[in-house]
Image (cartoon, rainbow, N blue to C red; front, side, top):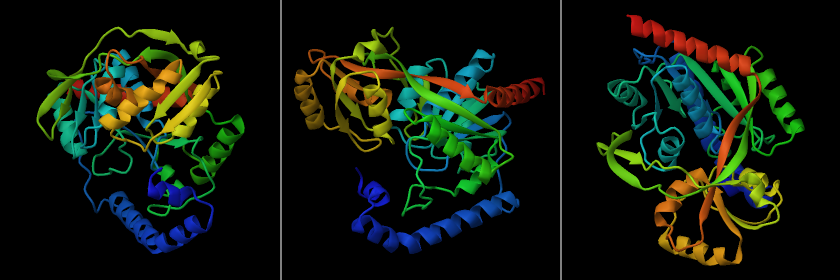
Length: 368
């Protein structure tokens, strides 16, 4: 656990003292966010308008709310509706672009430090619609729809903002959303209802949906090397185009977990929810959490491979698989990742309405 995450979660004297000490910085940050938002809402700060429609998927907190799978779900739905979407992310490499390339190999993924520049690059690649992954706070890029995710698994009573807490914006900011999606992995129905009630109180006019990120099957983490200049995603910082190797995955049913000794690895924003999902299928799990976006060292991989000899299965998230697989020797025990399905439990009409609006906007652009 990162030091700052310990500050947020520690209920003892250490956590309390640290949050009190950070309160002045939190207050300054909160004020800066409020001023910046007001300047954009009043038109004082300029928004860059795209010639093609833009759908943003974002959240209000630091950590895993499901932006990557939900962004991919929207891009895939637009692709199935005959559009040519591209996914645009902020300007660093990391695991999210590789995850998008793995799950949607036909959809370009553009990485750029400026979302506006990323949108321009997506247009140059032939996109007629853009999905912004983690774009809610980036108000310089105008958008046609704002999807905001709130994780029921990470929900707490605290509303502390950075750096004293995980909130990037207050809950009231959800009033800017076109749709609020409550995501869950292992959260109870009661917790989901609690989150929905809080969202309704903060933004009664914003439609809601509930999405479950549920394990679909286990897939062997192989063939995940980066191949240059194959055009699946563009890294504008280095002017290099990479591609995820695309192959038919070896799979196991999720029921294969039952009764097994499983070493579970997770370097994501909410590893506890991932572990709980695994455990719900009946294995004996040894948890190995790492910090979000953790860069695995050779020594750590060697240690995991050695530890794996005591287990029946080694399981990780797809975000971890794209980093671990190139370092995982063929002679080692197989590394499996959990393939997630995005299941809309309620609110599909609101999501379909957003998709229809984006498709219509794309059609109008094509006719002009």
